[in-house]
Image (cartoon, rainbow, N blue to C red; front, side):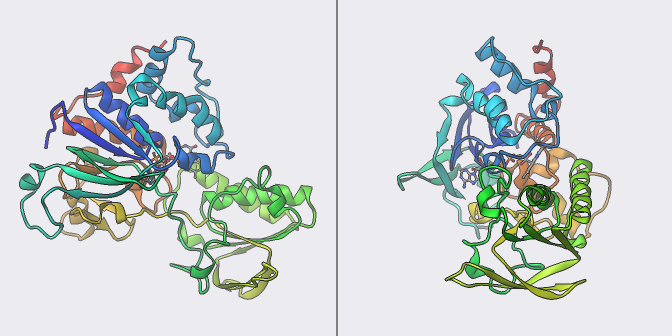
Length: 408
Ligand SMILES: Cc1cc2nc3c(=O)[nH]c(=O)nc-3n(C[C@H](O)[C@H](O)[C@H](O)COP(=O)(O)OP(=O)(O)OC[C@H]3O[C@@H](n4cnc5c(N)ncnc54)[C@H](O)[C@@H]3O)c2cc1C
């Protein structure tokens, strides 16, 4: 369904893909409101100390670079092959981009989207998609002072990512005792060698997780144990629990396995999962039991769970959106048919995979892949290009190709 300009687009989340989608929309003449719960690229900031596994050329768009250069002739982009940390990516590209004239006035920081709904239509309403498309989408949000308001939009793009909802540390769900200890377990990627060093140096640390984020933490803990020799690390991982990974991510996991094997201060319990966890409130010591390839029990000063992330569906609960029960993400009707085995065939075109049952509501970026952690920025740019070709009803529309010609 085409959406002609002028039309109002609300973008939820000023992460890398939210910013790039907004920029693309502004170039095309749409009115855009970007709602961001925290600061620019708040999720990237959570792992800002980590070095990225793709070079800057894969973490920037030709349109973004063109906008930055047009804004400030002295803008010095990082070298194309630079491997930046997350913080450097934010400081040298994403924040300057958010400050360009095209985006700055459209950006509402400290504004959390709470719910997206269709004006005048209940979720259970059986009206056709064409009828629903006639009315606007309503985004109710809350600012940092607790005040709520709504934004009305012709199109809503949810790029709110997944990092606010970490997966449980137990096998296929929470370990016994984990619910009550959520605030004591570290679910993020701590800066073990920097800001958070005191918390982990010379302590007994349990790390749970199998994908590349756990591997990133393990590599840092292994290095720390070389510098602070009383540090002891137990790493629980399950080989079957890792979804798709990029080659770079798989290589980080391999490096972590090798580091664990060569360190006497790291004990890697492969194919072993967390069974239950308790914590003594007076000493802060965790008592855990584990099972699987190895079974046993142990006491730890800190527990880190890096078991991946899952999307928060609450935001669009009032809309008519199918869910992929495997990847746990919004699923286009065409993808639902495949999942249910009603239809087979070749790859689904990118434009079709973005179309939800609810008209003019789209999920892009890391959230579009659900629990699968292999999403990369370049995939997001392809989603953006496909989406605006779709809503502009111009199959060949590609602002990135045009912008490439403007770059030095
Ligand atoms: C350790 C690590 C290293 C990585 N390295 C790379 C790499 O080298 N290359 C690569 O391509 N990718 C890498 N990634 C993946 C990277 O995170 C994604 O490519 C990118 O951040 C996805 O951007 P996004 O905009 O989809 O989501 P996010 O970055 O998750 O941004 C979502 C934004 O939405 C905001 N938000 C959330 N909920 C709401 C709400 N309700 N209302 C308003 N705002 C909200 C958040 O605050 C956040 O700013 C890495 C990830 C990790 C964890």
